[in-house]
Image (cartoon, rainbow, N blue to C red; front, side, top):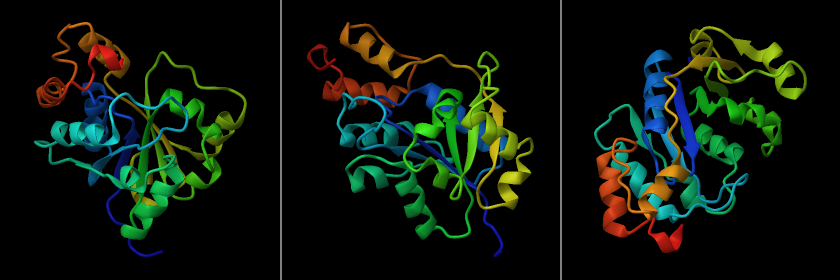
Length: 218
């Protein structure tokens, strides 16, 4: 196998809006796992949830504003440019074509891991990426079923395994638990409350300027 490059973290989501829960998790994993960068990938059309309130262009702009001063992060518009349902497998194929010999670490929460077998072509995702799961102690891992079998087969305990192979491993890593909800932020804004300290000031300023989450849109 050719020499592998430094792994890149991939954090997808609706980011409706992006907040400190997303950003702090990404930064902690960037540092702990020695990643080259973390790419935040706003989806165009989510598959497992209803359409976001903000437009794809607004959500892309909010993420861009949020990470403007953090060199560890980049924003990747590939799913918004591709349009249609945002399937992770398609994004990983695009990234592999652009950045060969690069391990990709798909960052997700434990709740996403528990539903992983419902993802489109989930079996093929592990051929293209490692899974990095932001683990919180209050969540219990399954003892039986598809996810339990995956963990028995693929769970690793050292970040070096993400550097030494192109894909296929699962790593659980603790992160600071910030119980921040995009839904709650939208409701606060719609009701006239100030969500400061839940999301970057630059994002809140954008929301205020554009009326992104006005009462009529919630």
